[in-house]
Image (tube, rainbow, N blue to C red; front, side, top):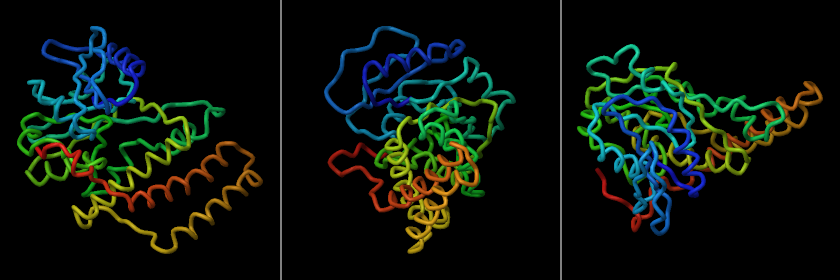
Amino acid sequence: MPFAGSQAALGALRTRLAALELRPGDTLLVVDNTPGPDRTPPEPGAARVLRAAEHTSPGFARNRGAERGRAEWLVFLDADADPPADLLNRYFDPPPGARTALIGGGVRDEPVPPDAPAAARYAYLRGVMSQQRTFDFGEWGYPKSANVACRRVAFEQIGGFREDIRAAEDADLTYRLKAAGWEVERREHAAIVHLSRPTIRGLISQQLLWGAGGAWIARAYPGSLQLARGRGLLRWGVSETAKGLLAPLRRPSRDAMIYALLRPLEALAWELGRLRSNERPPERRGRRR
């Protein structure tokens, strides 16, 4: 699990992970990818912490963590995941096929009440983190690394995650595994709750990052992703926002207004993200595994 944040947030994360049920041979590892100087080692606990901040990309952090284990399967989670105690058991019920390299577990946006902050409520209404959103790409579908299990032998065969990109490393991993003859399964019942970003700024930052990753994937794997609303994008965004302002008049609901206003904002941020580079600056790149 890659992590970047404060010591307090790291402590809260390790507390959540402590509830996971482990069997002999299972290990928990948090990879502290926070930029800056080395920090005070955390107190002993169920989840060990590995410091790996030489290169701040999720692929770098996950690869460093994978190197520390020997188990047959690797389970990757996001740091803002809240897993159930029996998550690992759910992953292997039923047992995966012999050629299965990836198992996509379920990802559910944090349930929040109607009066929650607008960004968190929108994520819940929209299902922003749902695995279905990326599996809907058909033959180019892939599981998000927010909750995914990978067979170690397959992972090592293709060299693990790319370390020189900021986003879409999970799509890239999936496509390389498929090209090597491996298969993907789903386990929606092996689901985690993904803690929501509470601010609109956080939502926009997320979509800008995903947009950069989407544009990179479209270039690296032609035909994988349908891009483009083209020159009509801005006009579409303005139109949808205007509809959002009128929505409460037709449907007097806070949820209706949140969805109508933030849906075009989400789409515009994703499209603008396509203009950003998905690669880390050369001086900060880690080794390509």
